[in-house]
Length: 303
Image (tube, rainbow, N blue to C red; front, side, top):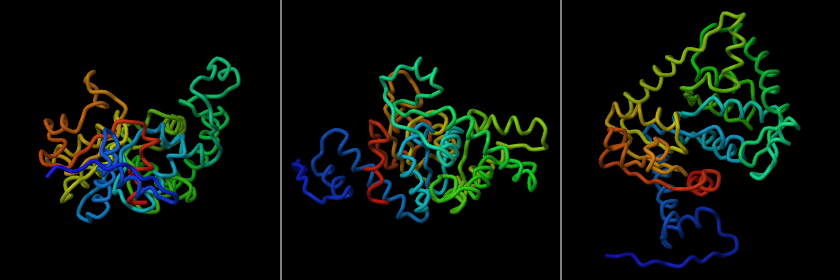
């Protein structure tokens, strides 16, 4: 029987979960996809036999969305994270310093002269990024190297996390023993600082140990699920490993990318089925839009 489209009824005191439920009843374009995404993520949390992956790009960690990502790890909803080195950069930098509100329309030449980086509409003083990471990471690496001379990227995240506090992603990854896989560990400030450090220290970050760990998780899983935010290497590494077991059983994509240029970032879940990266009968939804606006709604049923 066809469902009737219902009008929104926004009332004072309504919480996010109630709003998302209304999106399902109201229908209409991305609203319904947001509601379906929220329900699938809620299923991930309830399914104790599913290994749940959270994949995201570093850029959102420069914004207040870092707090939602942190809470998803705090609540132990996900068993593994796949991201980029920039996530460590921003998490460490914001732990020791602060970022500022900015504007897309800012004069970038002027910002350069003022020694300020622009990430979208976030302003990052140079003193709050590269300098902070270098000044604080080198002593931490010295501490870590006193105990270990070889380490996996996910173990490096844990070592950093246990030296940080509850405000950081790294802390909750360490606290809940959630591996953070970073296939592009060299592509960022933290990776570069490790490279500098190893020039005169016996210290190696072994990316193959990450691959050993993620493969063990996948092959031991009864089911797998994923919340995949954005695209790039984080998205691909998540679905790549899941192809070896026939694909993810559940997956939510959130992206602004289009599929017409053949990009992985814009590829829909349906395309992943053809590669065995998503199950033929898997539960899927793709939400088009900005992660920083959509993740609070999608997470409303689990936080």
